[in-house]
Length: 174
Image (tube, rainbow, N blue to C red; front, side, top):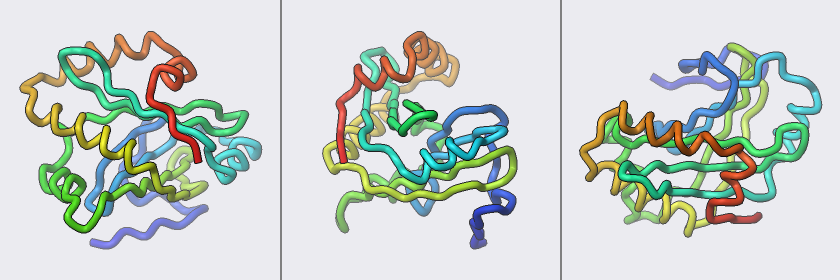
């Protein structure tokens, strides 16, 4: 079933219940859904302007955690999202990791205010960043951890602010 994404309309997929960013892997590719209730005009403008840098971080923990941090202009600032390959459909992982036709480096951002889609932005990430991400995904798939273990190590990472996580990761600029 083909979904239709229209700015100003209801988002046609599950909506995050809380403020923040969620990274998902869909059949169509890498996706970040940003939930910003009571979105202000300045925040929408910053989203449309886009980010100039971002970072990728793989945790140095027994459970490898993939963490992306995108540094949007004020008033947004750094927005982080984690990725757990073990909860994604295996078919989508296989499609994403298949590089025979090149690395899939596009990520689509959806900005939501509650149920309403306020903005869409697609960007291409650096090949090196995607290669690091692929490596973490492969480690996650090979590592037999539980969701509780993942959550425990993720909570340890979130003792740091998004800005601190940005500085800890491998940074990339546009």
